[in-house]
Length: 258
Image (cartoon, rainbow, N blue to C red):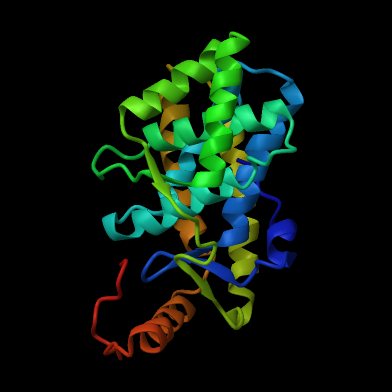
């Protein structure tokens, strides 16, 4: 993945945060990752899963799972990411993008950490109708990879049909950023992502490169999750529970999702 820190720091969603309990991550950061994935695949003008997987690997997209490594934070994170992927599945979107959505859902679902239960993909009925129409089209036109991937997700019970999706589910709104912390972390994150991309080109048998990849992955995780100041997220979470449920959380209480 290669985030543009200026892009997500200046967007309208800069203060929209995916609640991960004691920490959080900017909605626009995940949105930027998904957008890069989809646009990169689109440029290939390809329909096969191998081409999409090459893009996925080149961008090290599986690293996105390191954003949420606690069990209670996984649902908010995965549902938000699925929702952002599905937002690219529009009726007027070109075929590469619509196929890319199916491949992205497939890989996000099946690359979830094995030590956590898989989070299902919530799909509203209007999108489900469009997905099944694309499935039928691909079967008729012999785009076999889409048919295979869709069937695998169906067999695993990956989809959860719902009436609608709440774009604000699991999202907190922050009033500001203390001392420009997020700007500094975003800059470091972009640097780490660049290094991860570079180190990925090393040979598989290179032990030094492998160790460096592990260190970079750990640094990525730490910096990605620091994009939002911890105290701001805790404060916003407490205010949310007070407003929505009339529950005043004490300072020593564990935050939901932590």
